[in-house]
Image 1 (tube, rainbow, N blue to C red):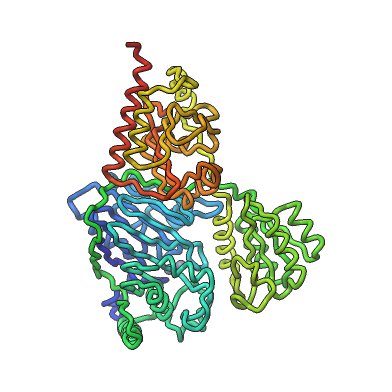
Image 2 (cartoon, rainbow, N blue to C red):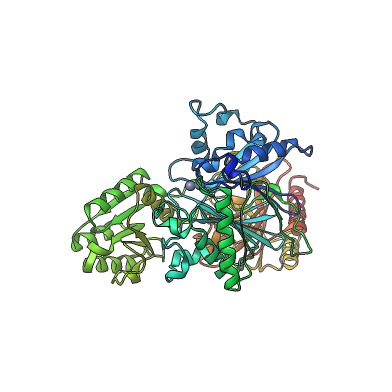
Length: 602
Ligand SMILES: [Zn+2]
Ligand SMILES: [Zn+2]
């Protein structure tokens, strides 16, 4: 894997003699896998130079993937000036955290409006697909990408990229949840522990380090880390190399040198092997592949793109007793996110409210709550609004894990002081995390003709046939999966012409993963349903047959209609790479041939 820094500055571009060596452009990193998948992370002003280099390359047109951490200016300002997006012929996928009410495309269009930008979003000539992300896992080319929410005053995702046995993490912009300048001083909280897990064992971590521990006292709540924190967390989880980035606009080259020397001295005296450096514009890092067999490029088939329409409008926040100022900020944030809010200051009323209008999220104050708050938390835990899991409880406090009766109920903490923007971001993340992660498939655009084509086969509800069972047997054996199906997607059910490993003959269409697979003429691979917002809470995932891995090859009739799938199911998370994908396609072809025989009487 090759990593090249095109922009390392935070907040604002800062060109000039004092930033010559580390660079003045804002965030932009180029990543290439050994087989050539191109990923660009963030599109700050550094993207201009990268864009020029890319279009100068004769091997056009380009196929690229742009991962945006968040839509603050310093991370997207380069978009209108990124040549491969402007010039027609190239093909890009753009990924960024989804908002609650506005799509990614609309958000980007905002900064490119006529008043602010000479290039509007309509003027971008490349073929662009916009993907709104939540936490989870998806695949771009031969790279597996994990996304995780960071702690910043805008909804921000960190990305962990893995391929060829190599892993890199981009965590920018991020402030430790505990708001301590370094982890050594406090017991690390649950959210910080998860952040550490996200970085664990990476070959390279590119981490926010805008401040030093000394400066941090005046920057609490600004959403950035200290160099000390980045070094400590990376040391703790066995990271090999750490690139400090998002350099403050006030930081000159000499002071960056000083920070690195100080960090290296600290690591040396602790006898830690972590290699730390300040990311510099133009710097290239090559990470050696660890696997011999390289995954082939599957660029056309990213598999776990996230949904657009979870039922957010049905979310309700319950706000317990709190001081007037806190209540005002939280109410304002909920209303800005178009989320309904209920509240009550008296125990009896509070219990009644959460029973008649079960909340998706509870925010409760450690100071004003008292015994009433404990009763409310107990009731919320008993209730459970999303199937078996109760609503998360967020405790407002001055610091994490205070000696409070509420501590045992806290799913997360909201630490004072906080800005309205910060509360809004956290509410968004909590709600996106807890929204029921199960989506019914959309109806195909050609549903009527598709159903007509399926009916014409006169195959539904017919007896099993050896010629189909032979194919599912081969599939089950050669992919080593317990379940293989020829599934046909009927009006309101999926019906199995052949099934190995399942005793039922059909399931409702609402639950069918195959109903998703027939939406596009390409393989649908879900490596881990638990991590996929479309399927994590699907009854076929949470209950029998406990679908954890799914791979479906759409079955296409000669007239182009996609009527069902040949699919593989396992109860363990899996991957399906290169040649195996081709094999599944080949077997799918055999099903197509058998089916089309029904159309031509012999
Ligand atoms: Zn930033
Ligand atoms: Zn930011």
